[in-house]
Length: 638
Image 1 (tube, rainbow, N blue to C red):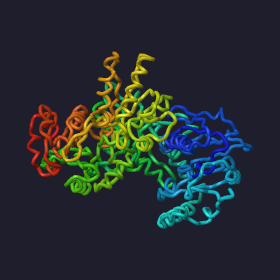
Image 2: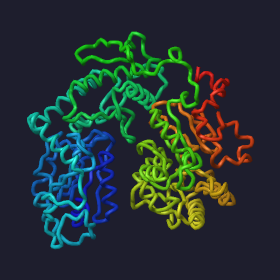
Image 3: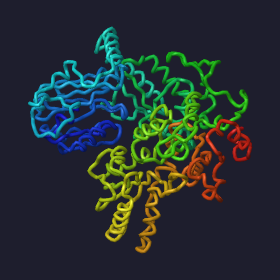
Image 4: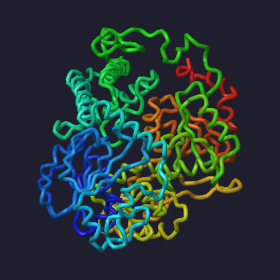
């Protein structure tokens, strides 16, 4: 709302220090109201402020929850500046001092520091920002977002209680209750002191723990409430083969199994590590106990290379940080071992999580397949984790989540969606950040939903040239026209430079299940088409990075989210679901409800699957369990 109402008269300076600052920079480009100067630095630090033009507007994030980075100070913002300063203070409000004299627009949220509902936010306009509203030349602003009246004056009704959309009254009472609690604690000074105490606990632990360090190596730019930590490989025992990501995944699996910590993954762009909220509603004593749990989980995860005397901690309740002895818990939450409980009798019990393909397994077109909703409901009730692993790339994970729920699937949260487009997003953003031209196969709406809008991102059916081609879904897309243009572009680049663009295959499907048992070509048929079309010109092999199935990247994302590689992939395509899972070291079940219901498509290949089922119910009815006694599975299940 602030960007759309206020930007335009001046160029904009943005500071890319975390995912949200990147989001705002992309939004500014999308609005197209003013040119933008992006200030970038290495991950884990705040960009230099030495090249700021005081006549330009400034947009910055005051506290980065995913990078643990904040501006060291605001002294570089001049009091007599000509431009406006617009600050995202979502998690900075109530957690750090804010120099209001150097900020013209402050936006914050209820859900961070005081633990309220996340769908509500606040905005404050200084006099200089109010004056900017009267400056003309902006694009039209939607009524819900309009901060000004027709004459440019401030629409003070927004600030007096009038609303167009009714907010949740529970949320209003929630924030009132939180503010009453804050006042009872001693007000803002007391909240800031609580944050400082929390940071001191974490800083002491990091300084005394050789295998952990701050993600933000610049103490002056380090957030005191958004604790982001990374493993330090140099401190690992000699000869250890596991990488950081696997160690972190195992640690988090253990902590969640014990109910000790949840949702402490580091963000996707960060080094493998942890992200811990240490705002004023968190008790310092609890953080000290968490440090004990982290030490235990690290010891357990690295026990293969840890001396026995260092592995005295086992599953149990930890005392306060002042005591170092760990008491064994008799009612441990850990699963019983095979020696303590009967062996599993159904296939689902043999895995830590189940991965389901979407099209042909759970849905057909826009409707759930028979029994699919019942299977997911059963998993929801039992608490067994599962993920929808799909090559659908016609939108973001949120869009796919809404689409599948609309088809009748009771998926509890968007984080259960692992899509090829979502996995490809980071690679495409890296290409754009490096200044490369990227074209996409698919609809513009899908591309912008997944990657956002960017001046170097264009549709492949019209782009004159590009460095990278990303293959998405072809829904509502003129595939033939795009294929002709792509072929010509590859051939032209080959003649001009001797090289060809690279391909990022988000959707790697060459064929799809169609209606009434038919099959249709998928968007990744573009790869074989290019190979055949360029062969007469002596073209070198085309570089293809496969993000979706059967590529390894999407399965590694599943392993990371599940915190385990003891997963079962359930799919209907041998070439993508089954072979991809097997190449990633996972077990695979071929279900004959979709594409591979035709026997001829599985000839000479059905052996690639560990199991073959006629329907999803066989995961639970015990009919597949005898197969587990084969030599293929004896080690895993015994």
